Length: 440
Image: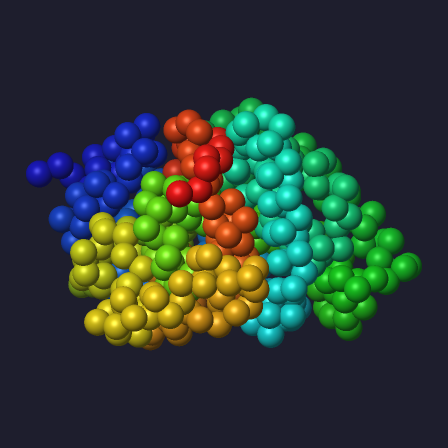
């Protein structure tokens, strides 16, 4: 049998980028937790749903923070602006520092706040579809990823934070340089240098914006944060803003791209209720495929002892395809997230307005969707103390966007084959050329 280390090596290849799921299946043959021998960067890989859930929720398990980085590579990382910013943010913090920063930021990502934002998001979606229609009419095809999937979540997050919309063109290449470094492959000195430069430029931008909002408050998150009586320093604020902007929209970009790809390939899905559809996209093609964790002490997961102070690769994408938790896991089936699969046909007919947007009323379409049942849920946004702050916002954007896209552009179809996003960490598309044909 091929060793787990060999399977992992295959996963981080061109073949694994195209289809990681066959490698996840092979890893599961070694059990829900696979120990990786040798001198590689990972001590273990966790693929089983229950095992991944356990690791993410275990209070003894930590993200790779500054203390971990110091103990594994010395303090040289502090000379790199990107690494210093990451390790000073809540995403790479544990304990009280993480709780303190998260408490400050989570006020804007509550389900209630997201619901209040829905009218503005619908308006933004409609404006972006206007732009798609104009480009399609003028040029015949358009890149959905560049002209919609990127622009919607980045515009929403920018509006939340208080970043002027006209600055987003400047933001995009700098955000991309940071994302290039975050992938487990391609961490070259040149990639890090470019990411460091982008971090310096973005950090200076945020410092200027904080100063402006402190002098002239507006109705945005940064104004609220600087007005808070908080023990989070301005430097911590800058680092968290830098990471938060990236994390809050990158997942949504690929959720939108992965969902549209399925809708274009399988037009019958357009009549599905939108909430189960979005949930199944998250499960079937998790935008974030894995995260890294470690524990100070020995822990046991699914009967396997994991050594202390070693990096564990926690495979969200594999957990979401675990046949022990999801029947027929490699099949795309939104009905699994209906309250009762036996009532799927009736529920789908009742919610047909979700896909067709009855009179353009997005709220009515969403109300027709049945509630998502309890039970095994996608782990695409993580779990436990580091559960993604922007999960509710990402779901809302996708649930609003797909019905409006299908209503306004019923003849939308693929113009050419999409180009896969060249990272293992994020699963999605770099470009997706689309065109319109006459609707049947």
